[in-house]
Image (cartoon, rainbow, N blue to C red; front, side, top):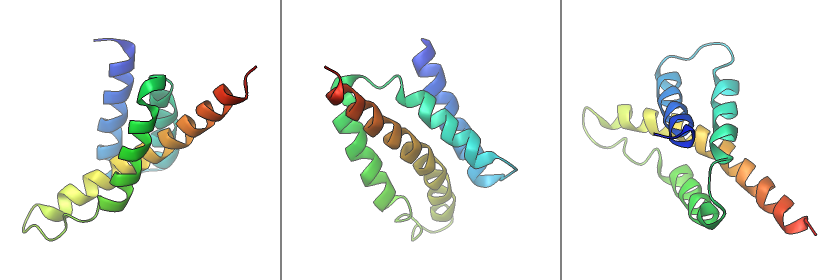
Length: 102
């Protein structure tokens, strides 16, 4: 398992835990892990990642209707959504920088 997979997995796990157990600076930690994970997204996967981030942003609360487990799943996906949004902002900045390079 490479560093890229470890960073991404740690980001997802921390984002899910923080969604259920908030603490001081939790949002900053999730944002930093999102930024770190975005550095490892390959150039050819950036478009797919941005589409996934937009889809997750719109759909993360849609599972509340499932009895018993829906709110739990929605809360976990909300945490992952915050991670993805930080990573998406980083991917957009990296893409812009790549396009502006001579």
